[in-house]
Picture 1 (cartoon, rainbow, N blue to C red):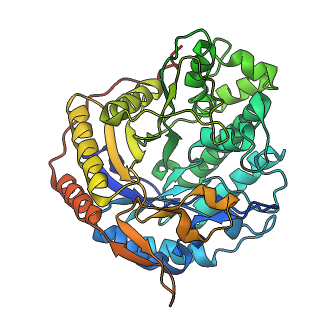
Picture 2 (picture 1 turned 180 degrees about the vertical axis):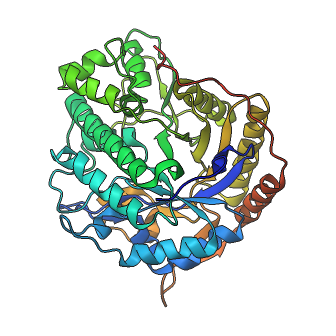
Amino acid sequence: MTEQTGPAWYDDGRMHFGLGIEDTFVPQERPGERAVDEYELTDHYELVEADLALAASVGAEFLRWGVPWHRVNPAPGQWDWTWLDRAMAAFGETGIRPVVDLLHYGTPLWLEREFAHPDYPERAAEYAVAVAERYADVATDYTPVNEPMIHALFSGEYSYWPPYLSGRSGLVQISSALARGFVLSQRGIAEVLGEAATFVHVEATMRYAGDTASPEHRENAERLRHQAFLVEDLVTGHVGQAHPLRRMLGENGVSDDLLEWFASNAVQPDVMGVNYYPRHSTELFEAGVHHGGGFADPRPTLDDGTAGLVASLRDYAERYGAPVMLTETCVTDSPEVRIDWLDRSVAALAQARAEGLPLVGYTWWPLFDMYEWTYRHSTAPRADHRLSMGLFDLVENPAGPLLRRRNPVADRFREHALAAASASPSPLAALGGPTSPKD
């Protein structure tokens, strides 16, 4: 068992700069819907060593990076570590710290009904423990479930991804299943790694603005504000009888016994990760206009810039009593616009840290471009779905795998990362211990 000595890496008083590689996996297919595997679409499977070297070349200290569960666990009880061994060896060689996403939407093809399968929580934990045991010498930082409320919405309410449930009942079913798998996974990893384990919980920012107080929107907006934290509230044991969503949960199958199980087995984040995209993270309610939300009936969004970013991080820090990390951010635009957001967001977070926000990391997402999820419902080539987001552009190459072309965002990111790495550590003002979710 690996043991940790001294302060945790994120607790040294510095701001740590990292990157991510988009790792959405939805391997299930059906008529009109093709599989999405971002590692395959971006040729990361083939170029993993070179990609990690790119991250090192721009000064990244850590990389948020996911394991393709559907590949390493191709059948019940069977494991294929060939590619993952290669990837973890590359992490060891580059010295970049992996912050491992265990679940970034995809389950194995053999797990029927995916998150709705009655054995899902135990299967997820089995997989988590297997990864932690095999790579204890390389990987000790884990995100059990990336953006669990996005999982719950897309798979449980919007019927957009497998298992295609819908409505409040679907949302609650998938949320509670994900939360049980989350708890079992974290507890299993902690048994393997002991004090060396660090858990970075990661959730997507879901903010609501505009005409939220009008009679036609008030109840829905209030529910959505609480719902944004639902899975994290469950896994941290903060859903009791007084929780604002207790009635909704009870009406959709969550018993008192299950809530007691969550309370008795609660797990906490060492770092609370917050994903924030200025153009997408704040939904706008409009007077007299009804939107269901989600891909089928989206609400308009409000670009709330750095104010929304800092407010989101403060909300999570106060709610869960843990240091926070910006675990995803970017804008999809020209290099000049991306650099502007990078500079403004870094400056805003430096100011927030100076004012006492316990912020330990900044993550630009992604290292190189990704392909939009709409690829799944399209017949167009991948090039038609490329999103210009990264430090490196993806360039089609008829002679082989996609090329990675460095753009000016990489240079600016490197400047920020190196400046942070050379800065003198400074203590952060603590916000106190864990708190109960706000009403």
